[in-house]
Image 1: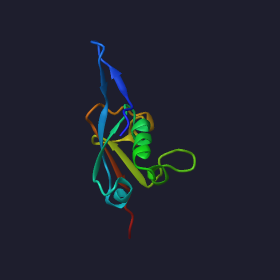
Image 2: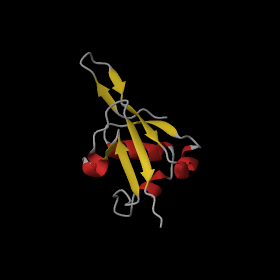
Image 3: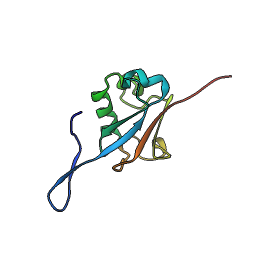
Image 4: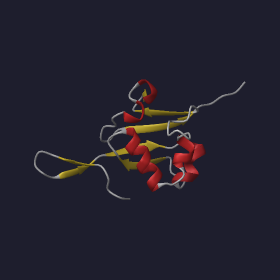
Length: 107
């Protein structure tokens, strides 16, 4: 895995901003069967871009042709739906969990 988001601290060393991404069952073939993966990033857009770099195929499942999150995919940072935060610009603190949850419909 490549090192991506590096944040310098006041002492001059560099720390890597790593988050956990929870992968839904239907998308686990893309992540090698893993239910969670570690990805670097400080904003949601960066986290999801790095997820796709490490595990190709997520972009097609998460984004529509305009680059927006698909309507049937819900993404949460911690317990907060990013649609009610800053969308793809939502800040993802180091060590936080991002959950990808496909919408369920039925009758």
